[in-house]
Amino acid sequence: MRVPQSAPPGRIVLDAAGVGRALARVAHEVVERNKGTADLGIIGIRSRGDHLALRLQHEIRKLEGENVPFGAMDITLYRDDITRGADHAVIKSTEIPWEVDGKTILLVDDVLFTGRTIRAALDALMDFGRPRAIQLAVLVDRGHRELPIRADYVGKNLPTQHSEKVQVRLREDDGIDEVAIMPPTAASAAGDARGGARPARRA
Amino acid sequence: MFERRHLLGLEGLSAEEITFLLDTSESFREVSEREIKKVPTLRGRTIVNLFYENSTRTRTSFEIAAKRLSADTINLSASSSSAQKGETLTDTARNLAAMRPDAIIVRHPSSGAPHLLARHVDCPIINGGDGAHEHPTQALLDLLTIRSHKGQIEGLTVAIVGDLLHSRVARSNLFGLRTMGARVRFVGPPTLVPPHFAELGAELVSDLHEGLRDADVIMMLRIQRERMNGRYFSSLDEYSRLYCLSVEAVGKARKDVIILHPGPMNRGVEISSTVADGPYSVIMDQVTNGVAVRMAALYVLVGRRRGTEAAGEDVPAEPVPLRRAVAAE
Image (tube, rainbow over all chains, first blue to last red; front, top):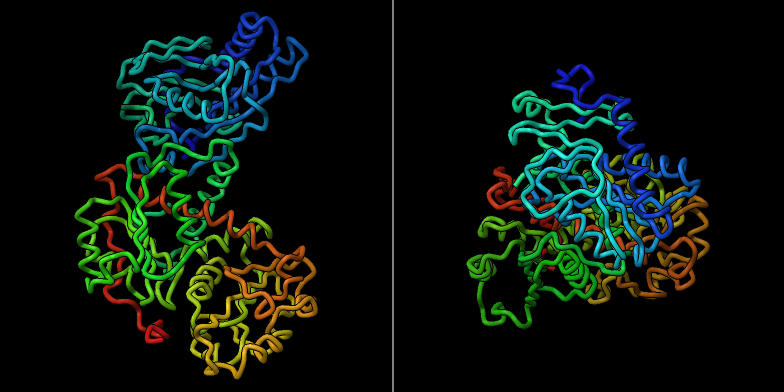
């Protein structure tokens, strides 16, 4: 399912340095808004949100010297549109090895689009306990929300057309940090294209 | 990926299909460890448990699995159903189908009953055990238990001991284990290990200690007392003297052997209490894995959007004759 390195890149809107700066800024904002890291926990939405969450944990440690508890969630079972597409047929593990009760949870995903993934993630999180608050951090907000959901921290606001695809590639999975806008046809052909092209992200 | 419409048996499934089911099951184990053991995946779906044979473990396991996926479950047993009033299986199936269930789990004393059902209803059928033929979810949970403890299945030697002749668990395991690359030994008295099993890829051994030599996995089968009226061996006592899994017999196997039993156990007949409760026993893991495997089967077969169901028919026209075996029993 990986997009080969040789795939036509589309229009690159965030390169490796850009991704790094965006995450560093978001980490500062998180620490500022929460006045430190007390009772904070970070949970990334698989796949790719978990990588970003780990990087944010690292950035926050650089600022505050504290290791914020980290977890990862697969929200396939909470989707409103379960299908048999190859992308989400395999359920990955959910690992939150600490109590969410009373914590402020920083939920992390790569692309905020319709809001349906976040809706599912909120439901999933509630089944693990009762957080004091949930905040949302995304690398890219591309608009076109279908639910009343917004992000608290945004790496980059990206105006897009609904038909375009936003492709996030991260070095953990893809060997490179890069966000690109793909014309609809090319991205569909590539078969992955997180954010836009995952059928699950659309209504 | 698993593109089939039904789960009728492990015979004919590819290693990729089995691996996909096991991987999915593994992910579901975590749901059962949560405080709230329920996910909304199959909300609004209806699962029918149609059981023509007594079963506590399998039926409960399927019911818990369905409920943890938020499906509605209905249990029908032969004693309370219209089968008592003379209705045929096909008519029962058609009537059930008219109520639009999303899956039917069927257990039946006749081999091939789920296959028959699959040809008459348009929802997925899961075989919960048919005659002496197959019991796919039991074999999948055994495979999952073995894989979790051993890391992989390929290359292992698995000894299956007891009443092989009547055992659908043994048949499903044989198909699954062979496909995954394990060596399978069938160990038991010649009256209960007919020679044609060799054609299915099992090694046949009649001496218990020889059969257990260097085994990585020992799978004990229940001796079905109701079937053992002196026809296959002269007495239960004689059987347990020769085939009861004692501490001494376990010593013939590899040091890191694990012992499985599909339950219910006859302590002192096919397995000694010391062994059943001993450190090698993974019997309780099997029960836990059973729920995960059944959640995975339901998720894979039912958790798909309407209209995207697999078009390919995977129902054989008639049950394959090799397992005519003991339907007449």
